[in-house]
Image 1 (cartoon, rainbow, N blue to C red):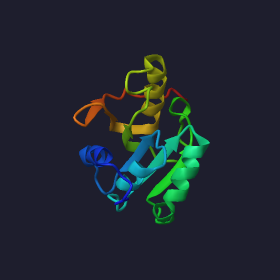
Image 2: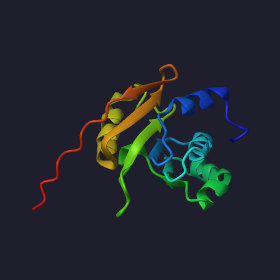
Image 3: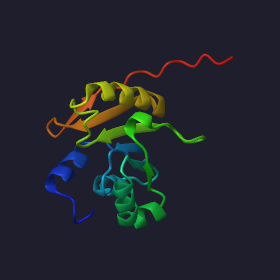
Length: 150
């Protein structure tokens, strides 16, 4: 495990219902410490860590070279309210966010947009966790609208 992880961060990651095969999405990854903790628990799974900050993505990329090379972790610059799956990208099973204002209640209007994006980027039954519980709380994900393409 990364030596730079705080005990609080370790408690949060320990509380996530991780399984070795899951596809995990971290919103607001910062320097990538939590993403590396999660990647260490994924055998066949994958974590995508996103952040709106180019500096954070650069830090996360630099600090996660081994996990990226192993194929367990990737990073992408994206704001949560604009996040969409890339063409051919599989949806996610589990989403988490730590200190993200759009999901912790500080910016509720933005939170509505983020939840809509996450509904479209996750599998049915996917779960979303944010800090602020003991140590996490779960936020129900809305169901993605059914496509009506003909």
